[in-house]
Amino acid sequence: MENSPLQVLTVPTAPYPDQRPSISGLRKKVYVFQSKRNYLHNFIQSIFSSIDLRDRQGSTMVVGGDGRFFNRAAIEVIVQMAAANGVGRLIIGHHGMMSTPAISCVIRKHKAIGGFILTASHNPGGPDGDFGIKFNIANGGPANEAITDKIFQLSRTISDFAICPELRVDLKTLGKQTFDLENKFKPFTVEIVDSVESYANLLRNIFDFAALKEFLSGENHIRIRLDAMHGVVGPYVKRILCEELGCPANSAINCVPMEDFGGLHPDPSLMYATDLVDSMRDGHYDFGAAFDADGDRNMILGKQGFFVTPSDSLAVIADNIFCIPYFQHTGVRGFARSMPTSTAIDRVAKATKIELYETPAGWKFFGNLMDAGMLSLCGEESFGTGGDHIREKDALWAVLAWLSILATRKQSVEEIVKDHWLKYGRNYFTRYDYAKVDIDAACDMMEDLEIMISDKSFVKQRFAVEDKIYQVEKSDIFEYTDPVDSTITRNQGLRIIFSDGSRIIYRLSGTSSDGATVRIYIDSYEKELIFEDTQVMLAPLATIALKISQLHHRTGRSGPSVIT
Image (tube, rainbow, N blue to C red; front, top):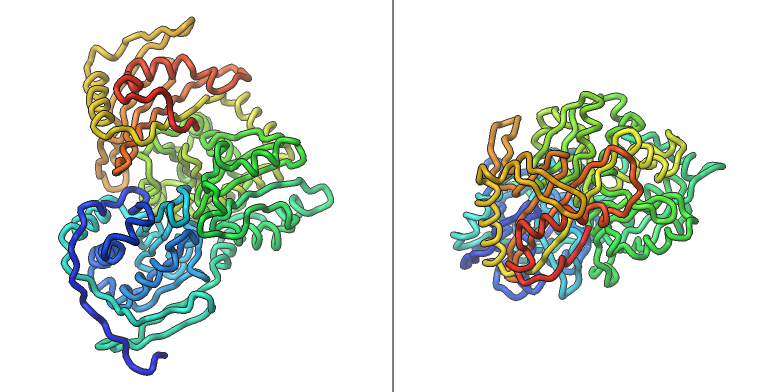
């Protein structure tokens, strides 16, 4: 307890026009937070002001981040402003670090009113990298659009913020720290907690840890390789997979969190998780997985680097969901995928007579369905998979789900995926990202595309490439009516659906001072099993997608920045 009450100040400030949170919160280059006066303070105050004072007073909130550069500096400001804004208790991860799934878990466990997640996900870190702040609500999931709109409007009119500038917290020492504040009847409490334990305990109640331990460290154990990419999930992998489930210590690589992620791009994809991809090629390891900076995205590999697409991973987990004890007890209420994700899980849902929901991109849409008891398993093509145990995608959960399936089926990753294709057919899927495109050119192209596909004459049009002919069956601008509360979310992407079920989807996925990102998603279904390269199989549809949009001509780009 401090000897004398700490002063609470009201500090004048001026608004910034660019603090609109996306589905991933507010993300900017680190230098923006560092160089613009009160930029961080304004956004944090806007979050606090969006919460009714009666709900805020004496409440509990959770704070943690992926350990990237500026994490600790931001936490200091959040603590000082939380105290000044009437919050009663903050729960903070040890050293200020906690994975996104763990934060969701802790919010729900302690009935907190929300939490601050300090991450820019799979974006690079370090002084020249990115930093982000995401606000999650009481269900443990991302704030919905009504809340983020309110935060943005407050950020545009903010004139002052409340802060307790002399308050200092020790992030290194576990336990409670209390502070007396000026004009406050109750002390302000900060609790530094073990970042892993609550989340690990949740997983123990979902999976059969005894069976997994035998599978991973018993007489006939498999060999696995896990790459934490120097993000926050490293300590979770070490504690849960190595120490508790018995994997050899050298199974886990890049497990020391670093502010710049060791110079790596913490994106669990074939392009960036090269340490894992290279180590899997020689066939020594049976199973591999990579995690992004904050621990919510995952990539699954089999022996010799056999790649499981996120869409196939979701479908395989759905088809084998009762290999996970949790679902044996709860049953399965529904499946869901984001609209751009391939339709592989749709076929599982149809065969098992389980309801399927197609939502816009963003985990908050899944969370609403889960809160209503309508959804058990969901995922996105952007390497996110999760269940209804929390309200965030969960990379370590996905890995344990896969290991549970492998342990039950006693087959390799490749055998399980190929059996799935034999049973349901195969979806070939790819995504082309055109980053840093001129904003005006991108918007003009999307507007012209919208006019074209909205014309009734566009339906039934035929496109021929080599010996393939595709006929348009349906085209629209995707909108989603939430079955829980009937809210409508519009303008979520342009869809062209062909008579054979193939799809081309165009989305403008964010704009910034660097330009816009245009994404083209291509999804094609083959009932008969064809072992052909994905890009070769999808080349005709890619040609059609570029022809319809005239993207290269309209944007001056000769090819995509990234192919997933």
